[in-house]
Length: 152
Image (cartoon, rainbow, N blue to C red):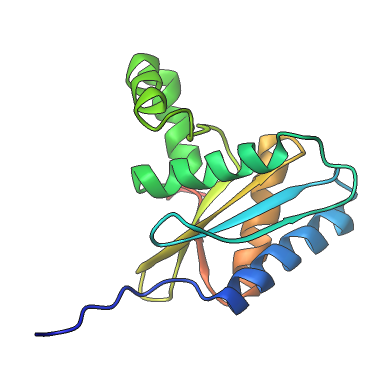
């Protein structure tokens, strides 16, 4: 019987992504952030947070990452769809038991060939600033960020 293996983001790479994202936040003098990196199955590889993050930041970061991974596109597109079809997004949020946050800061992780490896979610700053840090972390790890806007 053939063995099937999923290509996914490794623990080591997940740590690099999270650490580099937090370094970007520090360089930009952003508010304290929480970072969640998910593998291709939607399971947590890494949770990291700076001192001073509030109670729900991990849940929000995870919801951003799970929203991107679950819908198959970065959260810029998810946010656009939420604005255009709020009833649909509310239904998906209900089906996912609230584990989807449809705002910027959820970014898919792809390899150079475009294969999906996982997702990053960040919370603590404004959503666009959260996304800046997610993109910085993914790029620093030598991977390709997909925030859901092919024109940016």
